[in-house]
Length: 179
Image (cartoon, rainbow, N blue to C red; front, side, top):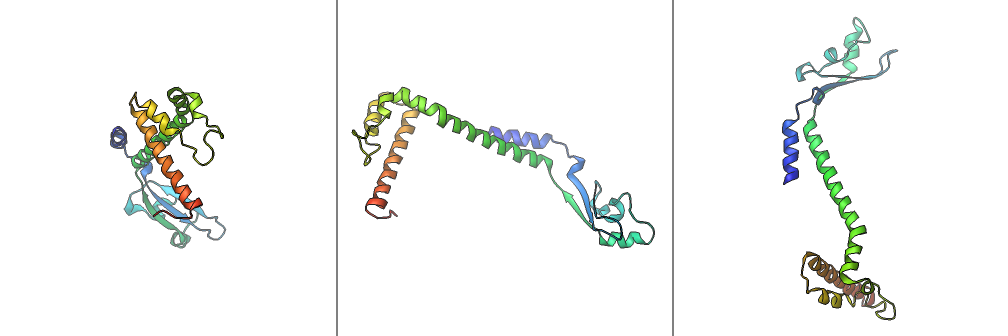
């Protein structure tokens, strides 16, 4: 909501630039003259070779022949919309970057503090490869004495992991695809 208000404020306060409207003429090579691209800030009705191509590279009767080869297009863009789109894009990118930092740096530290370092390390002798998340339920049930958002998220994550593990068993061991 705050981001939408900021973007609308930027769009409302951004004055229309003279570069937002232009006429662009692309002229191919003509006789010994190289091809050129001409840009001018003119109105739609003046968007033609005679008003845009300055200085005119040919003189006299060649002007009409030269201008017939040129292709002129009127272009209009909104720099405010472009700025707003870039702000939204960079904001989303920044949020994803912050989330990545959280996942890589803060989440392991919080898990160690909440669950204890020894409970996160699983020995092959204790659990084995068949049940990699076997003690997650025990850890969660012990941590329920302090209900908070992190515990709820952790519980949902463990439930999802158990479902994924069950699907892997079904597909790889029993060769059954869940629908």
